Image 1 (spheres, rainbow, N blue to C red):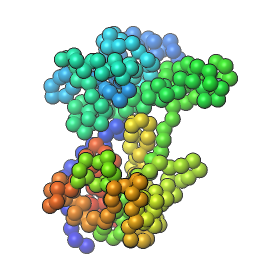
Image 2: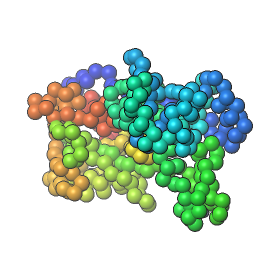
Image 3: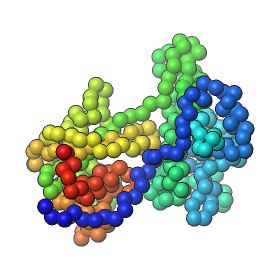
Length: 317
Ligand SMILES: [Zn+2]
């Protein structure tokens, strides 16, 4: 076996390793949460649809606002109790996307989408998991104001973690949508695809939503066959990543390729092809001779590719 490329220390996978304790038991205790909100150490992340509001600071922007500061930024659409950091409450405070857009005019604020915040390292990485938590739950509130069972207007309960229907008494919970994201392996080659939405020259793992009644392993095999015509056998879990665009959970896997002739589904992908381990390493390091690149270190696809490139062991073992 040839020596594995050394890609250096891995970047941190964005939105993971939250330092917050979610303290779910407090969601039933509105009085305790109100007392925590009144504490001077309480803070809120302010989300307006796809936009995150931050204060301009050096070297990082500061996305955490005192609760009175957050209230002054715009009328609250919904508030979610995210959890506790060293005993201090953290909240997600929703404003409308239009209100967030209007804040772009302020010179003391930096307002941008969460992908940019993560990829450009605009805030300290420890803020990304609670921002992802806030964005995903607030998005769910925006889209679930009416009961899916009877159509009546619902109301947020449990500090933003449930919506209750006053008419039929149905309880509605925030959703998470599982997405299989996978790297099919054939010995020293891996299968990557290109979506027309990607930046020019970027290739990534194939991915797709797991469907109702489907295991992740079956979703990996189905999506790889549908998108690239490659039949897969063994599937091994790698790691997962919340992907709050809007409410996905990326479930990273390796898959053993059993067939090798690619047939691209042009509805889903612009192209798909095999890449050698050395070529994949060059893409991760942004040193590919044709300028091809991998996704940024904030994304799980980067980590799936990188771990295979560096692994001395069989990632499917
Ligand atoms: Zn109802």
